[in-house]
Image (tube, rainbow, N blue to C red; front, side, top):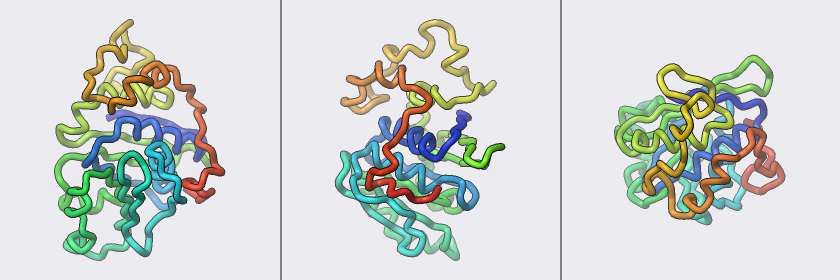
Length: 218
């Protein structure tokens, strides 16, 4: 597990954007956390990095929204209102996954038995301050586990030390050198930007006026 902290909603979006740099077709990202924790804000930042220009809002009543204008299709699901896990089939999840996009599922921890056993789970908890958030990021299955080192690299600006996984800050010289990452850890365009990934400041911001964020609450 990787632990990360953000101090503002824009930082949560920025963290999500960093994760989106690792996105591959067929990825599933499961978001968990209390109401108002920041699941929709996370999705906004993720979609912004994918190139989604449309305003992203939570599909609380429609359950499924699709954004097709980015470098990968983004499927955004909110399963809060599902009464039974059997209702997942009615969402057409299997078909969405077959389309080769990235699927983000708010409240996805409630339907994990219905998901392929291969996803990134992110639990967003309220922190001490009003805008503080603690994110618990855990890989499930081989697709995301193979990217664990890449995850540690892009999340370094927000990461907390975790005894189960060495942090970038405390690593020996060269231990988290991005030159040691396999090409499969990044999309081709990301390999050109490894220096930027290593040097990203902790307060990297996503433009709050961009249509994909829309000033929505977290």
